[in-house]
Image 1 (cartoon, helix red, strand yellow):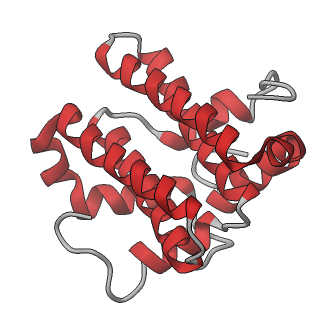
Image 2: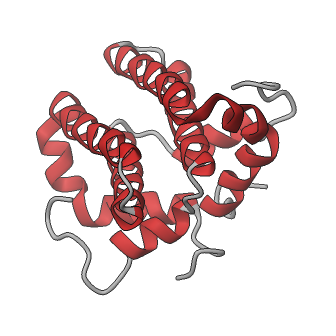
Length: 94
Length: 94
């Protein structure tokens, strides 16, 4: 597994394999709270100068977004291809 | 480009190619506001029953997360591999 070959689908599945049982039992509302906690930590990291921490907070936010998608049966790769890589994606700003 | 082959790095680069100039000029704080607006729309969609809208909001959140990463020179694939796919990832809960 390397940074050039890691697919979005693989990563979402990895998060599912490791965490989905716990996450699904918690439900969307409780899981959203965890997601937002990580978003807050990302905001804090954006203010700081700790690059390793900043990278980790980005990783946590995307991991929790995968979790939210998993427990809502959303395939993120399908979703981004449909919205951003189809014939008529948003122009200029998203 | 299909859902099985889309790499996280490709998607982050696509968002960079299309939007980074505008996003970088706006800066992290202003871009974080846009990101949070999309997070709010995701929360709304999680309450609803419109599956297409829910998928779109997930896509928007991950796209804006890519933007935030781009303008902060963070490679998301490197970040998630380091945090979640290394030898010692978080166990049970993230």
